[in-house]
Length: 431
Image (cartoon, rainbow, N blue to C red; front, side, top):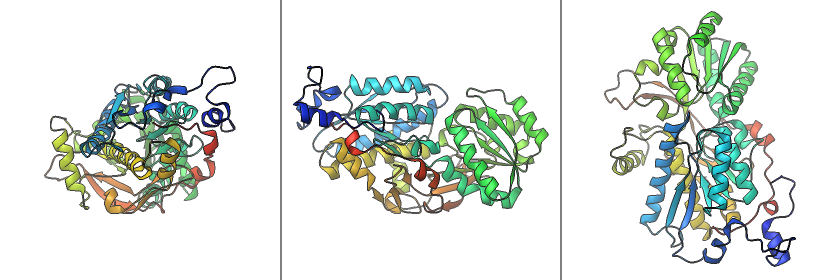
């Protein structure tokens, strides 16, 4: 739906008594939900839009585990307003076109009231365009291109991860002071990589550094030999990598094999736990960003880890990471918003989420968090970490170096670029 659209499904139904201009009844994908939404025996259906294949399959699985744990906790206490919560998952395959088709099916055929899940920003953007067309509230749990809460922001979409600009602000100035001013950018060749590297470039320029080169890394790259030869030849003070998923795993292994992790400073904009869990610590070189760690030593963290281990005793990942955390927190806050609203009406839920504030203790982070009502991005603590060499626990891979408050890393560029659709241009429905 265009941001200039002025006729909504809600206003059309009100004005035409449920009859479209063509004379046929117009109920949209919620024709059954509108009749039965108030009945406690009708489940609340949530569509899960996460990768089970492609570059971010591992992160997609972790994302889903977080969602399911939050949903199980709500179902154990009676669901939402007396309604059981059910889920339907479609693999988005780390492909925008597949994500778009999945969103269309989950909304129009499966009649899901809400959509949750994303790792790839390109996929998240595609899903959100479909969601806005129908007014379907969509939680982008784990993709982190600045454009997701900037130029590609939508009234129905809420972004729960830190973005490339947040992480760059936490890392760039300190790294330039510590390591030097000649930087090389390694950039995954898609929307998240490009926008994250652009944010880094802007800050390097701001603090008086220079970009000696930018090397694009095609998605699906497994042989980094030619790329790393160029890195060696450039001899930068710092390599700033915006490479994710399986591409990052391959890159880290080959950098470690060549000893390049020790010869120059590496800054990885964000390090997702599923991408490094179980790898040798020598592969975990450099400094990297994250939004959460299972050994933060804050109230509630150990209990949260215990609940994860009780629910997923057989999973290879024995402790939760940032991707699981984001999936859990996003889902918990969506369902809590429905409780506070006493309704699953999408506009009421959107307004509840727009005024969301969560204490540091409840978030298990160092600073209070809140939803930015202009961009729909969760403002939260950003951590910098490095490899935890010498740890007795093999799972304790990160050493947290610092934390930054949401105010210190706020993405003002996204604030200026975001242009949310009016409520009146967003179709209304009861899930």
